[in-house]
Length: 264
Length: 303
Ligand SMILES: Nc1ncnc2c1ncn2[C@@H]1O[C@H](COP(=O)(O)OP(=O)(O)O)[C@@H](O)[C@H]1O
Ligand SMILES: [Mg+2]
Image 1 (tube, each protein chain N blue to C red):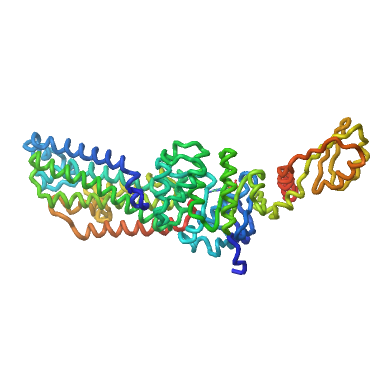
Image 2 (image 1 turned 90 degrees about the horizontal axis):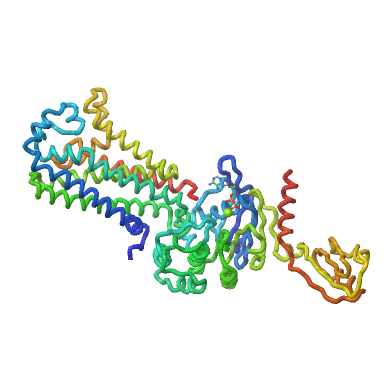
């Protein structure tokens, strides 16, 4: 039975969403990679004509130009993939408690013999597990597509980048969860988390162009996600650790807020 | 802990929402084995009080004990012993009754769903359809099923009979009596007295967040005005009933007398016995009037 706990129900409730988000990301991935065979000769010339600032904005290093890793970074990992995963997690995170409060079902759930902390933690874990399923589906399609469309890149590098994107999306999901616990309003929580994600993205990408911003770049979770270019260099433990610590802080703060407020 | 038998104890309970004083210095108890009707007009603060008991909201001030525990510290273990039906009952609409009950069973760590299924059968509610597709009355019944099935020590029921058909209302009253018979306490809120009249041992009336009165149902009933109709063998003089104790108003049309009586009708019957009486009929005490009188009294006091 799929309704054995709040954790299981969180995943069960998202089952249709899980399918469609996976199909969507998979289709996007296949579409993006399928053009590689026809463009990869032209690609090097093409990107060389891009202004250097634009390349920097998308996080493409000089050395990555014209390689499969550079292509994947520019077309998929630079924006589309994190954007999609983050959008999923913000929608899910803001619906989890604030959305349930607005629907009135939180009162029903919390009148049962479960503690608030247990409800919140299991919902967080349920969301992370559901995102893991989407990310796993994406990873399978990604690896298959690189093999099918002749992108030469090691599986370990793909896994490193995908894992980084997963942790980044978890972080903004937990920001949405925290905002939901603080405000109690789903739309507001989603707005706050989205604003935080856009700000983090702009800080990381604009910092490449604006000299004054350069030194603030290490403060952006987007920098922790891709600053070390995991598609070429694998995981950077410090950056992953920073992401995980930020996740933990959000979850603990969300629990504290959730334990304190009026929930009906 | 002086009052060990109290299932619910509120002392000076106060809850403000910003400038709104939803509950203001409210004190009352519910003892084990009794049913307390919790009455008041819409917006009186009944739901707010009840949510404090369930630890869904936190009081601004005051002491609250539920089954001997502070609701906040009692948390999940305390709620295990409470059955609750919310005023604005919102359950998981996409789950079927079966799915919902098994989810709740899992949260409780209780795999035996048979009592819940039996109760659903008694209330005649289908469990194989998504809860959201059921009529309001049937959803309300599922709310009752999940509250009563685990035989809690305290039932907190926020306007539970709204939307129920008369047959289910009767089943509901039987369930309440079964619960008190095994020693459970019941707090039953309503904005109409007639809903609690037949089950409540005591009635607490609140208005604008304040307690107007808490007293035994019989005392309240004794204050109710009863309309007595007496048909005589011939015309009678109204003066003969002018100063009969308990009679608040008399009205005679030909040989038919209609009187409003507070409390026992003994004096009226004895006064009537001097004449030839064809028939006597009495209407059930209209408690709604007593109730309304309390509301307006409270308004008068506040003004
Ligand atoms: N969450 C809330 N925020 C602001 N005001 C509230 C809230 N909940 C209840 N109130 C107000 O508190 C008062 C009492 O409401 P309630 O307890 O629901 O009354 P009842 O259940 O007796 O109809 C009302 O004036 C209501 O508008
Ligand atoms: Mg109410």
